[in-house]
Image (tube, rainbow, N blue to C red; front, side):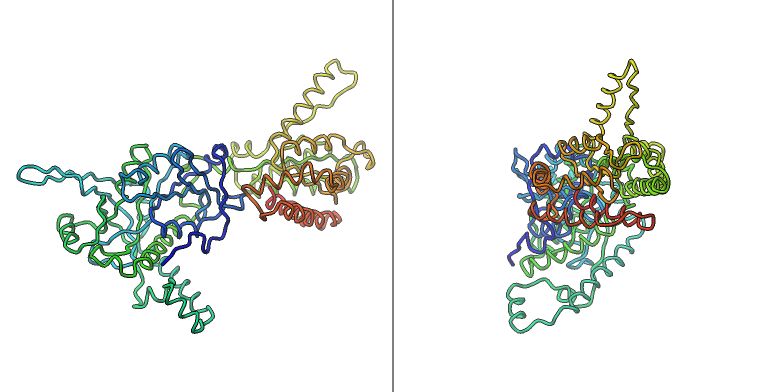
Length: 548
């Protein structure tokens, strides 16, 4: 059966230059390595973009021309790669791929999912074996009168413990539940006509109902692997190996390479988890592709049980916390009016800052007139609601207040330089800039020129600009300004063009610009009132989440 690696893939794959990896590397804790096309196909189907991206990233390593795919496997960021040679010792085999990946990505965990041959007679096609020990079965001394085994053994205690310490029965229940969902989906499909049946038979389409025709669900086991360079498909040699290694469940060709490369590079958390696709008894060719797909799908389900749980790997066991990937949102604002509108401003600013924190962003603030305290209160409430520590609170808020400048002060020039510097620092570090309100001295017609300066600075630094015109003042002026053709040409199109390389909403920057204005117009058609503060804030967050 021909396997098309792009079939059923939900996301586009886009190549990135190596210099981009330095920004992404701290986010990547897991390296997954597979060998054959089917293993890669099934893994890619379950790969989603990193948070904030719309595509799977592909680094082509320049020295060995090796592909490394970067994305999210359920709730965790991973690097996925495929060897092009079987076993552990060939040029592009698992050892060399892992060595190169460790140099580039510095993963904390290395996992090899895949397929293997079953040796234990209780095993059947589709069962999953989580490796306890990996035993190199080919390391021997051929002495004059005997063969002396020197079989290295490797054991990854922590990852094996994570997978198996709770209850292996829970894996079996989970596997059965997931497969039952697939069976139900097949039953709910439209019944095929005669032509479709003919095509299915010819293409040998994978169907769960056929793989479980005897009604016997697969199981997850733990057990030892023997690993070496021989591809086993011979009943006599299988019997010989079973006799020699009596407490071994399965045989593979890459496990010994995974263990030795990981340990050599001081990555002690590694795991081999494979599905039984044949029994190594001379019948490997019978339904080979379908059996391999079946085995690999079951491995994915077993992995899903762990990787779909956000508490499986705590932040202390990862090389970074989420903060390294957290974007900075600059709130550019001032508001000098008093009375009821001042109260509305305070409630709005507090809710905006709070929701920015709760949506996993940092807040940058110049402590603008009439809004600074409300921003601080909102950040405080958000951090308190999340239960953040003092250290985390420090990470989530950065303020660079602008000094008040007395024209008669002897330090007025120094104060002005300080004000300019603080504004530059804020705008340089902003990934998003939200412009709200903006007036001087209680006069709604006297606009805040500092907000326009910040607009120019954040545009220069390629940040997302969101003027909330429905709040009035300078924000309304800036909203009208960014709709001009000059601003679109000089800022918006370049912003979305660059963004489309790695985290596209669509595949066309003009479509993104059009969609951005459509949603921004919907926001700015609202009339800000006390009863719709939350609605306005949520529309702002929707734009940030979608386009930053």
